[in-house]
Amino acid sequence: MFSLLLAVIYVAFISLGLPDSLLGSAWPVMHNELGVSVSFAGIVSMIIAGGTIISSLLSDRLTKRFGAGPVTAFSVLTTAAALFGFSVSDRFFLLCIWAVPYGLGAGAVDAALNNYVALNYASRHMSWLHCFWGVGAAVSPYIMGYALSSGNGWNMGYRWVSVLQIILTAVLFLSLPLWKKQSAEDGQVAHEKPLGLIGALRIRGVAFVLLTFFAYCAVESTTGLWASSYLVGQRAIAAETAASFASLFYIGITCGRFVCGFVADRIGDRRLIRFGVILVSVGILLIGLPVQSGFFPLCGLITVGLGCAPIYPSVIHATPANFGAENSQAIIGIQMASAYTGSTFVPPLFGLIARHISLGLYPLFLAVFAAVMLVMSELLFKTVGKKHDKY
View 1 (cartoon, rainbow, N blue to C red):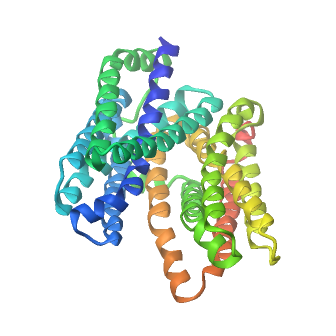
View 2: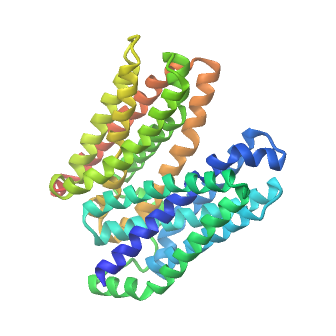
């Protein structure tokens, strides 16, 4: 039963990644057919992010009321419906309408699944599960690319992914007895009332972990979005080479999480976080070295990706140990909201800096958030005390 449920959760994490890269891969075609500016992708992504933040903050209340299994199943169903809605939309305002359930479903399932795994499974599974998220995020552009190249259009690309989500939804609903059985065997006890945002923030150390998560997602998303532009514009690296190394940044994250899974239980979450932050800092230093050679910034980009790999899953997995199993769902939901806030708003902020000051500030900008991540994570470790050194 336990292994079967774990297999279902692995598939669910692939599902989490599937929708994340669809908009970016399809938008060059979508905006022309819809008759809107290329910049309008930001409107859709902001609506999705807003829904995701809201549902992440509500995840504690929803999960306490209905359970992790039903919340996961209904959330994936909501996302599947939204993807199908995208596939039948022929007006921009329809995309905006469907973007609301798109974001609401994504945030709830993300928080519910991460908390369930943190409570019930070893650290290695958290690393591998987030690696599987990367598989989903990597597969969907190929699905969209095939839809476009075969003449089916972006609508069919969204429809194919929605069908995959519907199949997964059926699997999740069929697996609901497994979720109930596992929770009963673990004897999990929830609060009678949700902890809430204010209650969570009153717990010592929560503010530090939120800032750590915000800074991490700021670094990850800004690095990925602006890497090619920096390499081409500031380091005179060929666009083709820059694009391939920018993709290697994400490959580094995915492969790094796969490797971390083999050592996570022995090393522990806390050491993995510290090692990841240090490696990210080294990578940023390599990117910013004032030398003519393109070798160092390219190596730095890969190094940042490898450093990012253990941080996200390790912070999530350590949450029950740091703040108590009874508080973890609320805190993980808030962490998700903080993460989405960082990944949504910080990259455009650097875009403004690059436009009005200089694109050359890219490594310095990343270094500021890396420093915040380092300081906040160390303050978190100090606050939660030595009783969790294992993590």
